[in-house]
Image (cartoon, rainbow, N blue to C red; front, side, top):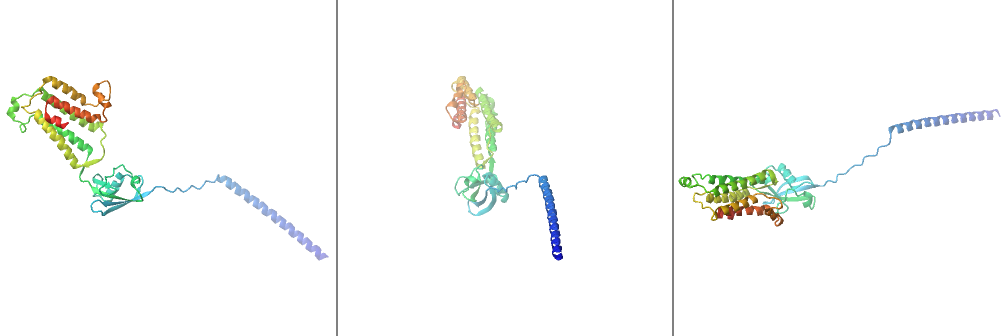
Length: 306
């Protein structure tokens, strides 16, 4: 009996200890949870994980072959889809320094047209590998140089004939015969014509940044300089004969020439109404200027120039 009471007392004691231990654990858990809550709140809102952006840029591989031998010259890799033919020429020059961009002509196929510098690779690519054929166009010159040479030559050449230098005309004959007033007027009109061209080339017209073969410069200069020499030789010759209808023919032609020397917009002036009738009035006025010059001087070479 005494032993049973003793065992009951010990069991109650164990139960009280277990209850106290449970309460202590719960209090400790609550304290930890409270601390964790404070820590989370102090950290602020959770930041979303930044999304990984995958690049959608497509790169091409440009294989460049010699248009004559069909042999591979080089391969340009990592060429973006927005790259132009001009960019390809620059990369090609870096890879092969002997191929200058201004001298290189690129084609999609041998014998095909040369690709313009502004064309993008994306517009001509049918796959990730693009094959282009390179041609050496020879020595090139800028278009500005071509126009300046075309117009400076006639200006200086005409003045040489106007001065009647001894190596062109007979000195005695030149001194004996006085110039007709139309000779001075023709020199003035001719100089004004080409000075205007030079000023327009330098300050008005937007000349292409491209280049052209040197042979085109030679051909153009031969045409302009040759016809100028032909015209100037007859007009400034000591035996030159003035126009048949005298001052009336000279005055009317000179006025028409000077009106054609500038390209106005259509207005009340009847000489400007040609803008309503033609799509390229500048060339039409150019032809009109030379026809007026031919009538004013009454020389055949001037008419052939027009």
